[in-house]
Amino acid sequence: MSRRHWASAAAVVLASALVAPAQAAAEPTPQHADLGMAHLSDLYVATTTDGRELLRFSAMIVNVGSGPFEIVASRADQLSSFDVMQRISQSDGSTTDVPTDAELVYGGDGHDHWHVRDLENYELLRLDNGVKVGTGAKSGFCFFDTDPYELSLPGAPSDPVYSHETCGHLDSLDVSMGLSIGWGDEYPWNLPDQYIEITSVDNGKYRLRATADQGELFTEASESNNVTWVDIRLSRRGGKTSVKILDYGPDALSSGDDDGSGGDDGGGPGNGNGNGNDNGVGNGGTPPGHE
Ligand SMILES: [Zn+2]
Image 1 (tube, rainbow, N blue to C red):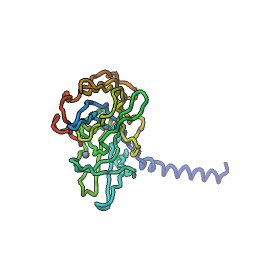
Image 2 (image 1 turned 120 degrees about the horizontal axis):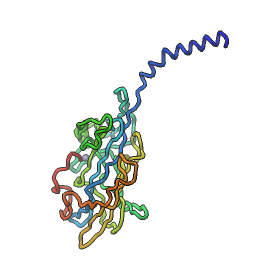
Image 3 (image 1 turned 30 degrees about the vertical axis):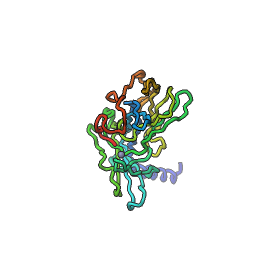
């Protein structure tokens, strides 16, 4: 090596020695959320006063990632739509806001706050050929910590951090929502839109499937654990429609296809059959938390 090359190589080494440690310290790593679904529960068929049949169930979206799932949304005035950013936590405690294609829709009809459109999707599929025969009525979600799911996850807070209070009101210009590590946001079976209509669905075997962030609007650690399902048999006998649980699919923390709990009868919340009418009020009181 010539003297001249040696000198410049030495200069490079010196320069990187001076710069590298500072760069390493200034480069935080993102702590991504990871959305998934807990097992579906409380399945039963309700009949409305006008004779429609609703397959009701409870669903819970959960965060099993290494950071909170958080969105912040703002708009210039009440006539504008919201710009929705995902706020990603970094290892040094800072946050980074990333633009998303998510939309907020106002949930009138008793909710009176803002919802993220399509945070969860519910579908009913024929088990033999996968044909979709029903879609969940609920399409918007104000999410927050309602139930502990797996508090042994690193970084999971022992108490809820996020509440519904930041889901805003009709005139809000700033809205935010969050779901902590290890926490879930439960949508109980008796919420107004928490059902799939099955009035014209034949008796037989079906898969009730729930997917978190089906449209992949949000950044998360894994897109492979967003789906859960339960296989069921619908039968009508003596004027009564019943649902029997045949098998469970994975949930957010299991990659297998069975947890061995198939065969449960799933009689429904508080033996909810026979409640007669159903519009989500009066059976079992106020939902625990969420709307
Ligand atoms: Zn709501």
